[in-house]
Length: 445
Image 1 (cartoon, rainbow, N blue to C red):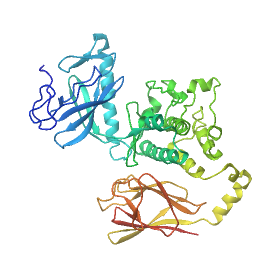
Image 2: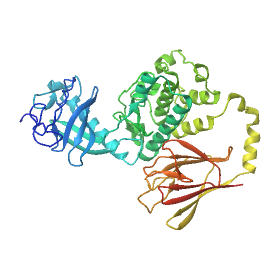
Image 3: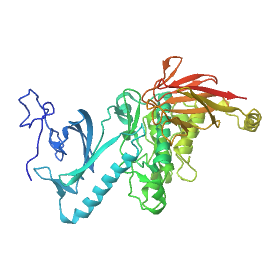
Image 4: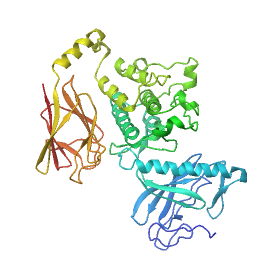
């Protein structure tokens, strides 16, 4: 096989050394010995610029897509301790006995690409654009996500404020719920390292290398994937059922880390009696939020919060409640009153002069968008995003909660809402989606 082809990312001519005749001066190579050199071209299209991550199973590069003239990320299957790389870039098992392990890992790597492709319509995940085989191994190309992970933020600035952490975690919980219910898969590796916060306020969920399909989980053995402090007890076994509740535990543990800067004890230590300090004692936190987190961290999966949608809902109801405002004895009266004064809740939607009414159920989270899988589907204009906003009517507090998750925005009285942030509106409020669709929020007693 010929030597590696290196290409100048400025003029796209062959690059010899670090300096090109066009004036481009390349950066020094990576310190990671198993990575490909900078400026190697893959698939006659992608010019590798630098290593941005390396783990036990692969290397991730920042790259230039010279066809679309944009930055992307290229992930390469390169398992440490299983394979070696030749001078020409070719990857091969270091001994023949590991050939089967290498092939199995390569299949799992391509399975990750398959999972990610199923999530391309979801704004909280990186979009995958290409996959191919070269150099004896596999690659996939995805959106380049800039930002800082939750772990990096905590390491640099200390714990998050409780309101900021709640806003981020509710966003992640709703995104995971969509991944569970629409893509039919669960992540299995949610942690502060795998949630990226972007400068524009968006949240991205990273690394689906351990993900599994929910539809098959009852009939499959699981690779044991454990991240200490974030993995629930069922992940320590290859045969115990796993599911959406597995991601709930990991996300609740991530939330705990965000606001305290401390991890909870590993699940096996907790089984043996080691306890964590409840949030209500670790920080200034309402007992209702602390109780919600405790339920999500139950060791028994059958007693744990069942799914991420439920976790987001419980956090939402906990916001603003103090321990003294939760009176157990009054709950039947409240429920009776709500039943008597049940509201008719609906949306009046106007798209291109065509009006329609969409009835809603109080206290239920809805996703509104162009995609047919949304709870409220508004089709007919490409300016609307596949998933445009989350909407919820709180029958107790009598207001609508709305979060914009779109590309082209949501406005109210001419003011654009900040993406990924909940806003609260009284019935009768008019909002506009992407400047093309009018929506009035109605609740009548």
